[in-house]
Length: 161
Image (cartoon, rainbow, N blue to C red; front, side, top):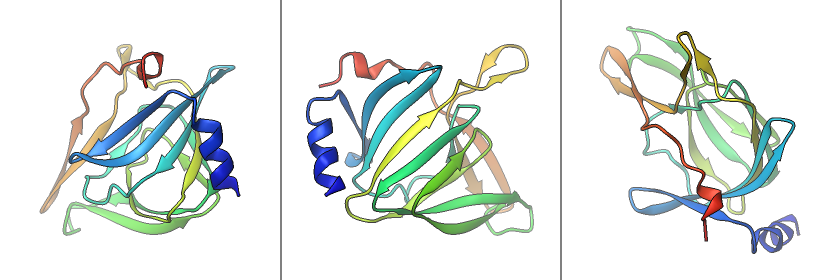
């Protein structure tokens, strides 16, 4: 029921199809901004389990699961004793997820028909007035490297089909 309602609601909204390795991963629908908070509807098409752990550029973000659910692998600690240089945990997200710029994670499994209302606050600003961007952890035996994602972001919703 909720799934059908969300399909109808998003049918005329600007959408961005995010792909991983040329395959659909996520449909992102821009909902709008209110009091400095940006809102999106996300429809998960697949997991990003092949992609490396990533973070988000905002000071805070939340995902409210509207239907479905997903499994998230998240970093709990960095350790030279760990096989890949970090310790992770796996958890099922059914209702709510808290995300910030220091939260490295990846979606490893998605239930069919998973939709979330994703919203976030302002971008994190680092010392020296640098805007924090997206980034990935490159895991190698015995160490972890951080690789920033290209900057700047685009206002894709202004010209999305």
